[in-house]
Amino acid sequence: PQYFQYIQTAKAQAVTANFKMAVDAVTNAYAATNNGQVSNVYTTLNGQAAKDIADPVYGRGTPAFLVTGGAPVCGQVAITSSVISAAGPASVTLTVGTTGCSGSLGTSIAAALSSAQFPHAASSGVVVTQNGSVQN
Image: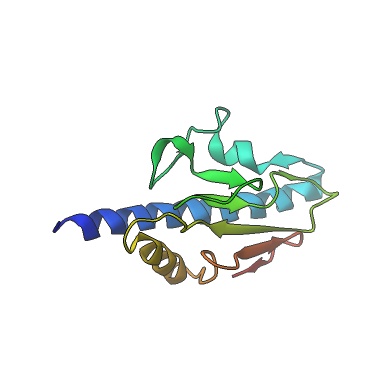
């Protein structure tokens, strides 16, 4: 239908916003380790119920963020570690799932991420290291 492109673009932009938020959360968690803080990025992002923020593609019941243990579905942001402390991990990789996206939604998500300076988010991922650097 004629409105599909607008809906698709909004979903891709929402996924991109979630990805930026996840990168910021991991970067901030690493910064907090300098003060001896231990951060659980998963609960910070998803909320206590783990589903407070829903995947923009699937909606309620599917969390927007996933910590390793499964492949992310379309629109989910996967993070390789939930707990970040001075002891590690040395880096965290974040990726966005495009598997199972209908039509060209996966391509739209990848394009939106690329335009937000994360060209590898939907493929090999973005790495945030302990010193706070973000390798796009």
